[in-house]
Image (cartoon, rainbow, N blue to C red; front, side):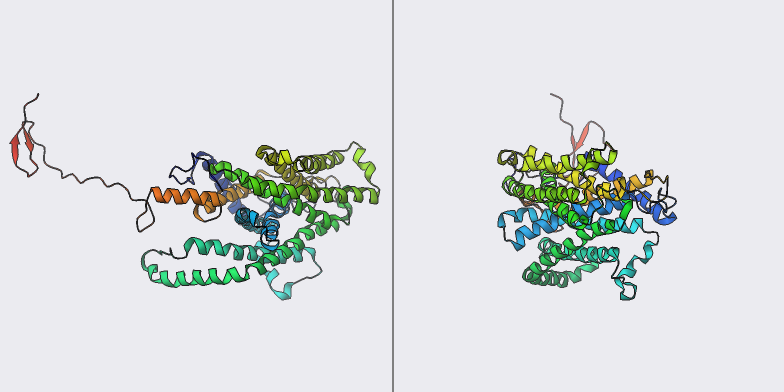
Length: 452
């Protein structure tokens, strides 16, 4: 990946920037509220009730988070299983996004659970309930998160193999740790394809199962969305948003680090997207006709507005842009179309899990509390900060690695790995002397030279 000429200046991008200070501030506030929630419970922090047992922590942090992290397995399928080598440059950033995203999906689930301290029970066979959709989702998410961390291990090995330098007394373990890293690196390269295939399988399972979860909600969900095809629609939306999410984060990262975007691979990803979106649109139209609820689209209700907005902005608009070769080559249009798909999928999840979900209790209402907003915003800000930290310290983005290498060549590091600091010459402090005398280099006192 090529970089702008003004990027190769021998200066590695900084982690702390004015924008990142704002992001870290939002993250700190969110984590402070999160600690308060874990200490004092859901009732003290949220507006949840028996009628609304979940809110934005499930709708956004979990349902949307799972969908938006789909870029990891879709890109891995394309690059590793189908052996499309031109997309390998996008694989590591997509994998990192998925790994961080799923980590916070798990945190979101834990935050929303009343008895979060017992969530580890799902790993014990005596507590298993194979007839539960939530059980299948929980097991698949845990397994896929483990697979993601295993897939990220080669990046860790590449970063630290041959460079292990533990501090102080831990230095005696340098050789052992280095040998373990080299062994992992040599072993994982031989079996990584197995984990890629397993990751794709697990992703398809829990992406569709989230839709199954809402099928059993029955009449609580509005008829425009309540359909037996909901599992199929959920997995199709995951496929649809996978590549747009990779395009979105790649263009954002390129802009943030001053890099030239991967125009060829990104345009190639955009070429696949309209086909998946078209399949999803056909399934949606067939479902409405088959269930005889097409008339609800034109009844003037706010549900019909959200449905039309979701399809128009998130499906039809991106199909038009992505289907045009000329627009696909323009990074601005590419970013706009990817953003539209993301907005459409997020709105779909919010419609299904929250906006168009109506409990049986008459008159029940739910408005997220400030604490709920703070935790969600804090999670998103932490994801952004972690992504920036990891790509600055691990070999994830190819173009950024060129910048780091040039910076290292321009500023050699010392043994500790940090640039040497200029040392100030030591000045020996003497007692104050009379203006008429000055010390000589040898220390002898000589008469002061006359003024010119």
